Structure formats: C-alpha cells, structure tokens
Image (cartoon, rainbow, N blue to C red; front, side, top):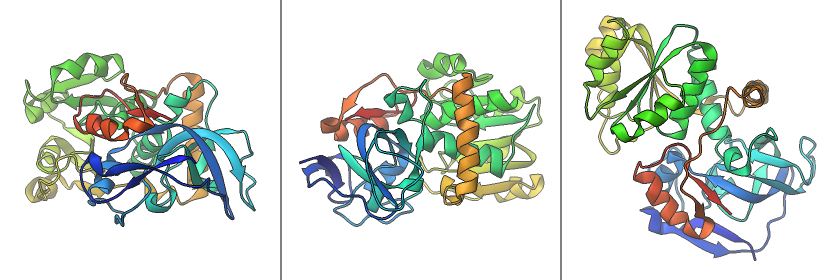
Length: 331
C-alpha cells in the first residue's frame, strides 16, 4: 500500500509518521497525483506545531507543494488529463489535501502544468513561492522600476523568488541575511545589495543604501522584533508585508510612532487571499510560466537531498536555517 505522512500530535519533527493506507480514489472535481517530489514550507512547520492559520486536528495529512503525474481523475475534471505532469497550487486545507506521500488527492483546480524546462525537483519549488511573491508584489503593492525592496531572511526559497521578481520589474532588491556564508549566493542570485546583519547594522546600512529615503516595500517573513526595524527602514508612505513568523514565539509589537509619522501601511498577507479566484490564479500562472520559459525565473533548490523516509530529518534541516533555497524531498 502507498506511504503517506501524518502528523500524530502537535510538536517537533518526530511527530511526522509514515503510514500505509489504501490507494485513494478521486471524487468529484479531484485528481490523484503520483507524487515525485515534495517542497517543504515554513507553513508546514507551523501547522505541525499547532501554530498555523489552519487548526491541527491529529492525525492529519500535511503539505502544500508537490510535483508529480496525474494518475487518475474524478468526475467533472476537464482542466488536466491522466499522464500530465503538474505541480500543486496551494489553495486547499492541508488537513484534507496534504501532499506528503507517494500519492495525494488534490482538487483539480489546485494543480497546474509546469514548463518542460523545469525538473521535478524545481517544480516542487514553484507555486507556493512564486504565487506568494506574485500576490505580494503584483497585486498588493505593484512594485515598479526604481522601488527599493527589503527582503529579510532572503536565503529562503521565497527570498530568492522575491529577488527574481525585483529583477524582472526593475526594482532594487536589498537582501538581508544573518551570516556572511550566504552573501555570495544572494549576490549570484541577482540581489542588488546584501546586508549581513551579524556584521552590519540593519537600519543604518539600509538607510545608507537608499540614501536616506528608505524602502517602499519591506517583504518580511520574520515579524517579532523585525517589525520595528522594518518600520524604521520603510520610506514615507511605504508598505510592510508581514507574511510569516520566523521569530515565533516572540511577539510583534506594533511600531506606532514610525507608522504615524511615515503613514505606513502594514499588511498581514497570505497567498490564500487570491488563490481561491481562478481568474487571478490563471493570470499569475501565465506570468510565472512566461518568466520560467524566458529564463528570467528559475526556482532555487537547496543541494541537500532527502527521501520520504527522511521527512523528519528534512524538517529539522529546514528549521536549522542552513538551506539556500527550497528544501525538496524526493519520493
């Protein structure tokens, strides 16, 4: 019988257990995916710990990002066919449609073909990262030529993706990372500036780069104490996009004075604000696929490799912050 991963209780990576269960059959509007690769996300760490937007009710499936081959389709499915290679679009509850496993049931509207130039490992790093940045940069803030964009924790897959979006739209990216060992990788990825916060003052260096103007956008997955720093480097009228909580459990304190003085917009953001809209997803998929086929976009995958049997180790590695890009598990 096929293997699947279930979260048996809220906790550390050890709560991820591999089980065997009968091959699932797709229902109305569903497809069955023979999974080849799985991309890991911080959202799944938070879900596993019982600290995510979606409540955890163990035992539960888990996982948003997977690439594979459509193995069966249910009634009413017309957008994909058996044998087609697709990757999942995060738009459904993990508890019901989690993709960690050898097979996964997903909604047909939650898969999209990916360009042939991508490998299955790269495809597993595609939709969560690129759709998240698309919604933030193209819908929420509409970045443009000459905009300064600060990208904290930039060595994540989302950070590398954000750098690529800045390059495509003519914005000026300022990537930040704690250690100098990741600086060269960020520069090679196309970041215009890299601030190593263990060696440089976050606020002072960014204000120096922007010639005292500040950044129009801060794309922040850290929150906690970072929110005040983000407000201090934001330009008047700027936008801070809060899309994660890497600083958990440290609380985020609202930076009232800089927000008032600069008239800042602070946005709590997830991609689920638009992935339920097929028209917006279709436009995003086209924009991203065009970027992939033209060579402007390329998913960055960490070199360390894991198998499904090593799923707990893969989570530990992601939480260690050693990775450069997406952590991908091969099934």
